[in-house]
Image: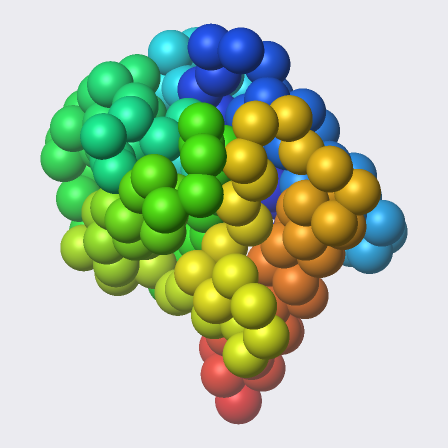
Length: 167
């Protein structure tokens, strides 16, 4: 089993809707135990307990929200303890060309500093799922795919680590 923590911040409810669909995608693999939490309610132990950490934020000036940034700022206390975990990100924004990509990249950058593993995507939305306003059908599909792919990657990482441990 893979433990998946989906952390999100939301003001309008759009990012929360996306988080719910990321969770649905993760659960669809039947390999995941999924926990869905608001950023302000997430503690450092939650991060350490997860195999997969997927973070969603509204886009604010091309960056993650203050609540998500606060979580990453607090995570300095556990620096080095998230290494090897799988990370992914998603965002909702107010319009096209309004900073969604840079918001996702700001989240992924914090994850990379922690030594986390990030899987890109060769198709569109290379860095994570993004929606303009309320997620439409394609955005929902992208969110579900993000959750599913993150679990699949974490399963591979865990099985490889287990094989190396027993070798």
